[in-house]
Length: 117
Ligand SMILES: Cc1cc2nc3c(=O)[nH]c(=O)nc-3n(C[C@H](O)[C@H](O)[C@H](O)COP(=O)(O)OP(=O)(O)OC[C@H]3O[C@@H](n4cnc5c(N)ncnc54)[C@H](O)[C@@H]3O)c2cc1C
Image (cartoon, rainbow, N blue to C red; front, side):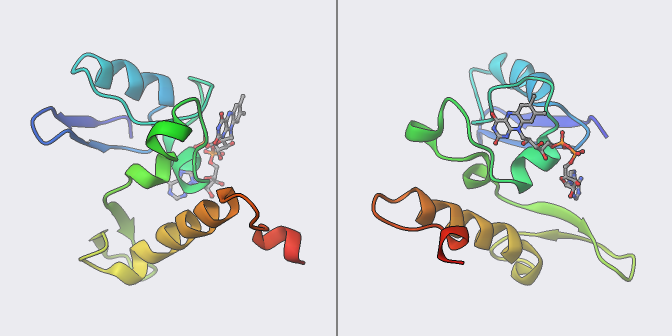
């Protein structure tokens, strides 16, 4: 669950969700790359990404989830599929929807979904 494959040419990574932000960041930094995570190295990248991921680089490079290209998902019937905007977008969509919601809430003068309740 801590596997990490970095493609320095494509500037992408396949990361397993058992990695912490610190483990990922150290490995990516060796290639001069970074993904915007939070302020704590011991936080797991799975929950951090699904929660949006707000950190030091947010103003320049966005949330962690803004950098998410695809996810490997195990469906309720046991199939393992890769979901992205182009493949199984219905499974990728919850993450993308969350990203849109967070982006809206960061715009000046916009109320968050929660503040409307
Ligand atoms: C000390 C500390 C500092 C923090 N700082 C920041 C910060 O700077 N910025 C920020 O944005 N957040 C921050 N957080 C919040 C952090 O992003 C959340 O607590 C996040 O949920 C942690 O993810 P985890 O994978 O470590 O935890 P977990 O408890 O393992 O996961 C949390 C939830 O994420 C989901 N999840 C995790 N992995 C998977 C998976 N592989 N598949 C499906 N669902 C999964 C599950 O719903 C799980 O219940 C901080 C938390 C702590 C404790």
